Image 1 (spheres, rainbow, N blue to C red):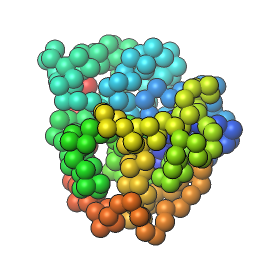
Image 2: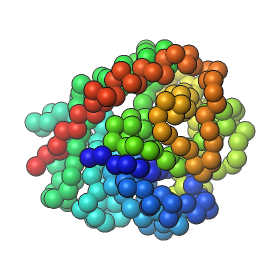
Image 3: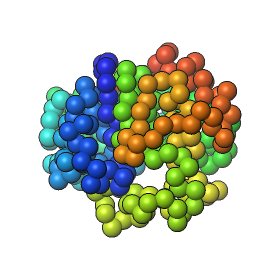
Length: 263
């Protein structure tokens, strides 16, 4: 699969009331994440889904909303990622076993899992870009990380919708008061979630750190940010700019070796 233009749609509350749906759908391919719905939100997030990237932890939510997310179109491809132990075939991986249920719901669907080797490559890329060992720093990669890396492999121009600049949430109370998910308007706030994860020493996502990396990648790849609309700065103060070229060393060789799900 190759797409000249892609819309990479986040799940952020930043998308609410933005009316970017038609613009999102004009891209050749539309990439969405986890269980983020389109029904009822088409005006802001669009209708089409070419590829949906799903975390192991969101599989149950996907199944719970299968009438909305799985039965809409047989044209959508699904990429599942998770810890190697959970993704093993042959009855040994709990998540992989659940994928058999999904495959039963979508007998002609296009389903893939990220291989163990490519999961390790993701850890290596994170370390090269941030200087942090993912495991030693108790960091979890996000679905946004995998979706962005996949988009860099598949897409010419990447239009990212709903991803804030890394300095927007400098504290839990800064930045606009928007929900973490556009489809959960009364849920937790985006900035407080980002900051609490970034500061935690326990196992947590590093959303702000990842956005610093994406900002660096946008200076060497055709990545554009919308809703909010922003342009990466020339210099990135929080990261060593020289490391941002590490993605070029890994991605052209295949950041994702997509493996077909259970048949």
